[in-house]
Structures are given as structure tokens and as C-alpha cells.
Image 1 (tube, one colour):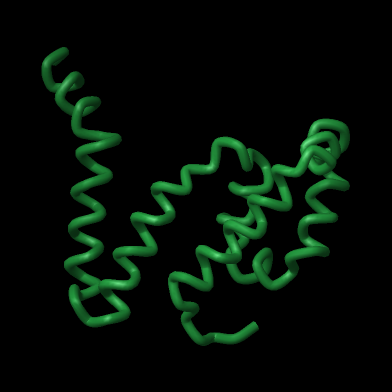
Image 2 (tube, one colour):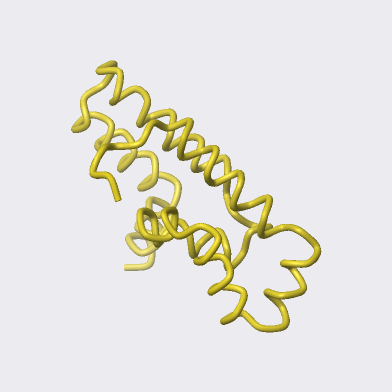
Length: 116
């Protein structure tokens, strides 16, 4: 495994390839029939992807039809900005943290405060 950071388009291509593989009719049947052997087959076919991005790998293969490609594209676009020195990693982290706070947490906190 290389320690070199992969370019966003290479990551996206690998994700799309893995999704295409997982969404075939044959692999959908395998996934539903025997998840363990299906996972092993995926790991054997995509060993570098599995080793390099294990969380992403399993997120994709376990539920390929619901994988949020839009969110990956968003993260890869930000990665491009950081890679091209258009935004600092710190500012990217702050922006993403705020966006995801607003999306996932803010209403819950607001409701908790209102129920006190």
C-alpha cells in the first residue's frame, strides 16, 4: 500500500467501479443469500480498496443501492480544494463541521433546549 495520497478522481473511479460490481444482479443475489461469502468475494476482487479505505469499502458493499454518492462527491470536491491549496485543511474541517452540525445536530439541540 502506498502512503501517497490519492487524487479525488482516482478515488471516485474506484468507488464507481465497486458500486457497479456490487449492484449487478448476480452480486445482489449473493449479498442477500450469503453476506459473508459475498464480502469475501468483494475483498478478494478489490483488496487494495478494502485495505486502504475499509470503512468506505464496507459502507458501499453492504448497501450499494443506498450509498450517498452525492456526499462522497462533496467530500472529494473539498479534498480537491485542499490539494490545490485553494482552502486550508483547517478551514475545510471547520466548514464541513458546521455544515454537518447544521444538517444532523442543530435541530436536535434546539428541540432539547426547548424541552427544558
